[in-house]
Image (cartoon, rainbow, N blue to C red; front, side):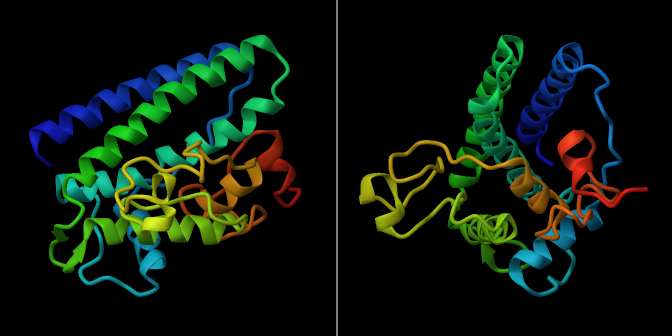
Length: 221
C-alpha cells in the first residue's frame, strides 16, 4: 500500500475507535460481535459481486487501490443505516450521536469515492476490470442483497441516473434529488451477512451481529 493511502486509512481507523468510544458512552452494554475481516472474507464478497471466482483471489491488502475498493464496501452501508435510523430516534443524546457519526461517515465515504474516482477508468491488475466496474458491481450486489430497490450506485452511471440526469460521473451517490439513501436495520443485516437474509449470518459477521434488532432475527439458542 502506498504511503498516502496508508495515512488516510490510518486516520479513518482511529476515527472509528473514537466512534466506538462515543457509542459506548451513550449505549450501555455495547455489544462486540465476532468480525471476519480476512482477505478470504473480502474475496468471497468480490466473487459474489462478479458472479464468478476471480483468479487470483482478490486481496484487499495487496495494493492501495485494492484496499480502497475493499473500503468502498463498508462505510456507505453504515451511512445509509444512520440516515434510516435518524427519524426513528427519540432520545436527544442518541439523535446527537447519530448526527455526529453520520457527518464523519459521510466524509469517509466521500474521500474513498473521490480517491477511487480519480482512477475510475484504470484497470485493476491483474483482472483487466476498471475501478468503476468494480464499484458498480459492488453497488449492484448491495442492492440485490438489501432487496429494497436501488439504494446504491457506483462511480460511473448512465447519464439519466447522474445528478439532475445530466452527468455520468457519480463521485457521491444519492437519489434523484441527490439526497442520501436510507436503509433499515434489516437491509443492513442482509448486506453485511452476505446472505440477503437477516436470519442467516455470514460474511463479515459469521455468528451474526449483536444488539436487540439483530438478535431478534436469529434462531433462539
